[in-house]
Length: 182
Image (cartoon, rainbow, N blue to C red; front, side, top):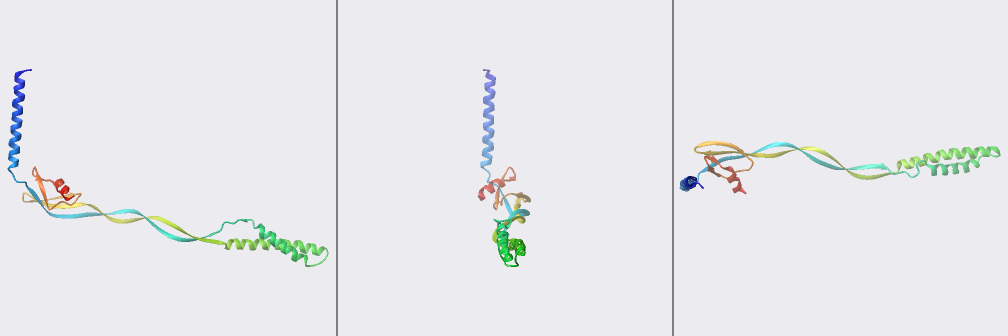
């Protein structure tokens, strides 16, 4: 390997080490500097949030009908009407009265059963929900006022800072302050 290259690397390493030592020594001699937080105010914004709102409602519903054609009412009415019609008249009039009584009784029986089925309701409670918009306040951050080198500065932070924050390279370091709060 070339002797001048080795000498250059050694001299460069010594120079870097010396400069680092001087910089570290000068920093160690200084007291840490802090910026004073003079005000911190929470900032909110209104946001619309979907919320589910539910209530119970009483519902009346016709029961499921087993005999939708009202056959039982029609048959029963026809039998009763036929028996009553048979009691009226004589001869061929008796037959006509029996048929007319059966037809009228069948019609009346069907109507009675229809009315009864329409009035047969069941009551139940059901839960009805809907989405409504609700306005809420949401924290946006903190407007912070601090003093650094005799000057007032303002910034907005995500979290509330401590009363004092360290200064690094002439700038307030809020990340260290926020970590100290938690």
